[in-house]
Amino acid sequence: MNDPLSPLTVPPPRYLLESDSSDEEGQGAYPSTSTSRGSKSQPLPPQISIILPEAGEVEELVIGLGQAGRYITRSSGKVEPEGEVRVDGRVVGRGLKGEEGVLVLGLDESELGYEAIWELAEKLIDKVKAKRWTVITSYVPSMYIPSRSERSSRSLVEAPIRYLSSTTGDESKTDGASKFDAPNYLTGLAAALTALSAHPSSPSIDITTLSLPLPLSSLSVQRLSASLQTFSPLLAIQVGAKNRIKWTEDDDEPYAAPGMGKVRGTKRGVGEAASMYT
Image (cartoon, rainbow, N blue to C red; front, side, top):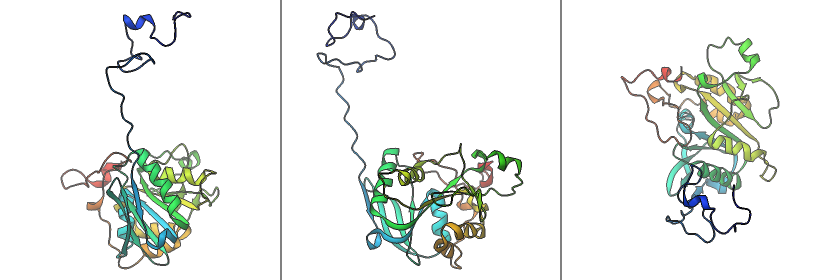
């Protein structure tokens, strides 16, 4: 025990004889002492630049994350590039101007830290003035924990598209999409945007997150278009366009969570894409 009469401006006597795991070098510094190591400098906050058409005022903003974002932009066919997102000078997202006031923003969050993701979410909500927000990400079906009712009545040949919406209420299934239930949780930019949209201090936005089952080569455009009819009718029109570019098994990528870094697509001889998710 420490001597109650010992001044608090000096280390206790035991520091002269021993140390434990919680009192390593450079820790437990007292006002009258100096450590052998200099104090660590705080990392600089991420520098984020968002350039969007029409000052960010659009009818609907669609944010596609990772390979789900690449799938959406490819399924949307040939659309006009418009705008970009930079983090610390590096381009992490590009905007594609669609029809009827839809802006599709493809973002790669694989190399972004959590601080950068949170900062990016705040800036997007502050800058973009959209009536409707749709975030499209992906999930691994074998890692998803279905609800008890879903397990009891489960006779699914294909993993469903899952949704989490701020406006659809408690419906368990809507036009081919099943609700995203606890204890499963969102991560990355999808989680940050959803959390901020529900915070009292943030602007009120209508946001829906759609999680597409991996591998994306097994997801038909017809299924996606049917689900989008409820949540994003304008995007459904683009996805169902005839000039879309088909997503094949060669385009499938291993699952990558935010911060994992870029993951290369599968190559011949490595294994079938579908086996990555079973």
